[in-house]
Length: 475
Ligand SMILES: Cc1cc2nc3c(=O)[nH]c(=O)nc-3n(C[C@H](O)[C@H](O)[C@H](O)COP(=O)(O)OP(=O)(O)OC[C@H]3O[C@@H](n4cnc5c(N)ncnc54)[C@H](O)[C@@H]3O)c2cc1C
Ligand SMILES: NC(=O)c1ccc[n+]([C@@H]2O[C@H](COP(=O)([O-])OP(=O)(O)OC[C@H]3O[C@@H](n4cnc5c(N)ncnc54)[C@H](O)[C@@H]3O)[C@@H](O)[C@H]2O)c1
Image (cartoon, rainbow, N blue to C red; front, side, top):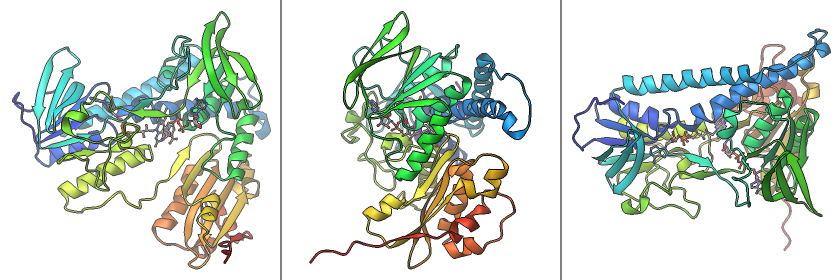
């Protein structure tokens, strides 16, 4: 804990939560000469660095190496029996998390921010009560307050889930033993990323998903290709299933499931709950500051990220909408530009790319084919299976496909999906085209290094598209 400011109660700025927006914003405002206090109850860097992106992508990297090692003979390389050292895998992850966390903490200190480690709560519109982690209390006041408190795992209302020793995405990061059979409740981002990683480490993995298929917001052909790839890697899926109850037995965790036809019982050694997240707003005292939340507890904001209380802003996951690090970081830039650079910008209409870090990665931006159909747009849909990508064939990683939705009148790209190796990187190329109004014909005729995955975007736009037209309306 640092105290660069006098111990009086008045500050220019208070930031609650050192997440992906709070840390950078506190730093920028402190560097501009304001007296800034950042209050964080747990770790600087927030979910992404400590329990989210960094640890999971580090584990996924180990899992990929195990997978490639097992496939070594496909490339004519003999490696013998492959085994994983789960302790070393966890240590590697912990080391990288620690280095990112301490880097974020150093950045905050260097900027001259006062960092208080404790739990913040509004006691009035511009008054914050801090229960410091050392047991003491502080009260601070500031005309500008920024809420960046993020979300936490949401546990469904299932009888016995906690008593059965189920883990959430944070708890599973502390495992000391490799699960023999990992049951996962929820087949979203977290379920899929952990599911494939643990299957590759050698666990049996069963994903229980209430929806009838994976990735409901993706086109069916994309979801099917992803499901097939994960199935090949040893992940079993139970779709249209809900857990009714859970209990611990001598053999592990037993769950009773309601399936489409029948009720049945499944036992695993471990159970991961990955059914979404809930905002950290219930213990913030928002009502004392007249800060409105929606029916799920997310803070309501306008397109400048202003809440219903004057001078109070909310940034990142806590305001609802797309919950990604890059969105939280952009929220910081929106506020910073408005307050410090007189460059008002809003959150309206920004492109929101995302990548699920399965292998193949599922990356998407803008309109899907299904969206275009629903919106009755006149578009061309280009599709290229990875089996036709030279780089994929050479590297023996041909699972997946690329798709692009192109406006039939302007030839501009309206959306794209890349399910493939480094899909997130290839998608960024298409997103750059969207940002710069580069047409499909320009990409088709562009010169890219051979043989890269991006070069195959030539081939994507050389393929024969399917044209979607608005349905004629009945008169
Ligand atoms: C397992 C997992 C993997 C993920 N992988 C990715 C990924 O690969 N890519 C991606 O873009 N996104 C990923 N995400 C999502 C990403 O982590 C979040 O979108 C991002 O961290 C949101 O940041 P934020 O700034 O909203 O808040 P957070 O990073 O959640 O930070 C909020 C901070 O506020 C603190 N806090 C809360 N309440 C209080 C209080 N009352 N007083 C003081 N402090 C408080 C918390 O301790 C926390 O440090 C992942 C998430 C998870 C769980
Ligand atoms: N690579 C990334 O960018 C990344 C990675 C991890 C997490 N995240 C972020 O974290 C958020 C949370 O991830 P998540 O996977 O927990 O949520 P999610 O919303 O992505 O998926 C939750 C899944 O659980 C299912 N589900 C919900 N209740 C259920 C029940 N009772 N029984 C069976 N299935 C049930 C839902 O149908 C859904 O498919 C994501 O939405 C994303 O914003 C991003």
